[in-house]
Image 1 (cartoon, rainbow, N blue to C red):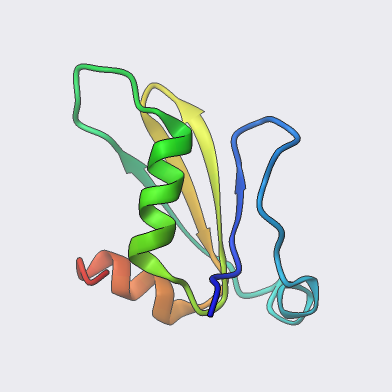
Image 2: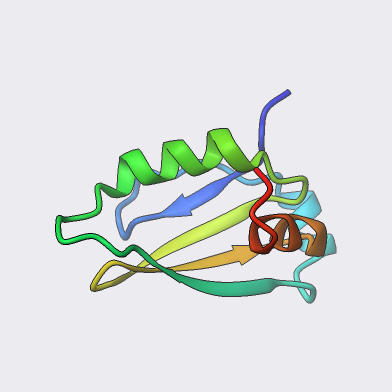
Length: 89
């Protein structure tokens, strides 16, 4: 199957989200901020593709670039966020 992802890097190109699912769970968004510890720039496209391949979220995830190598991750299912926090792909 495919993961329902919507990743926003401030540009028009983004992955679509199953809108019905998001509407049902719009009040249940689980968020966290991540930071990349690297001296080099973070390639948003590469990071997005890598995380999509690792996480395969049940409810979807939206990723926003906050600048300074910080990213906001909004999950639409608690299980998805908990898996990431525990370090499970």
